[in-house]
View: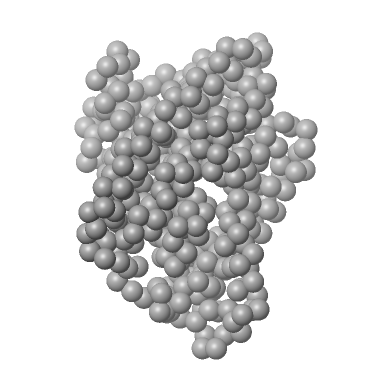
Length: 349
Length: 59
């Protein structure tokens, strides 16, 4: 496990794969696996952080406040139909849950594994800490590893599912802006609606939207800035090192971990495929076609996924500017991945 | 981990169907909310330009 910790640190520094997470996780793994380490003994600081921040689900919630403060929903509000791409791209979450159940995991553990596909680290941690605490470390490592591999995984899936003609489809930009009142009322309305549909999702969606309200209100710039910078940095640091401390040899170096990593990859690819196929399905009925590639951005890896799709479109046709559409689908993916986590918590007993 | 428990697989299929229906329905509600908000509170003239929300995009 010391070598695994070293590998994660190397990936963070040399390859710059999600360094903000993989570096603390790698060092946490080293701290936890030094024989007789007092850091993870009862009363050790990592054990206290695990109890206080992970088992209580506090760290993921705080991360969502930070993420909400960073999110600009205006590309989505300019083109509301993009919300559906976020929903379609959650197919992999549920499909992988079935696969994991078939492989012999219990329903709660299978559900936690499926959430890897949402490419949403905090939601993965939130669901895993409730449903599969013993699998928390491999699920978290898989979720963040695949998020960093978006530029490799998504183009492979998108190219296989689309023709060059489809990838060249141009889409018009929205002609209207969005009023400040709409930007302020959107996070409040989404929280209320999500709370009515799945009350168990309120901590997740509520914290995301609270962060967004801090940003959009424009009356608390210092709170918004603190959420985006200090809160995000501090909680990411503590979350990473604490997750790393749960990577013990007896629970991590198992065939289950390999299975979880494999199924996480499938979940990620299936989510990408779900979004693209939904775009192709819509094109069967639409007179003005949409570029199905934007469906792949309906995952939560923001803004990396949107950038990857915009770059792919520009590669096929340098005059095709898909970035704003892809960003809209991408922020829809942020909301939808949290809703997927909330629905799983509500539906799985 | 036990290999292939049909009860668990059936339960997971139920969650798949209900989950996808639930998330599509919720997203449709969000879409309606967005459309309603945009109609009720249209942008002012200076915001009604292509790609403008009145604030810089940080991407």
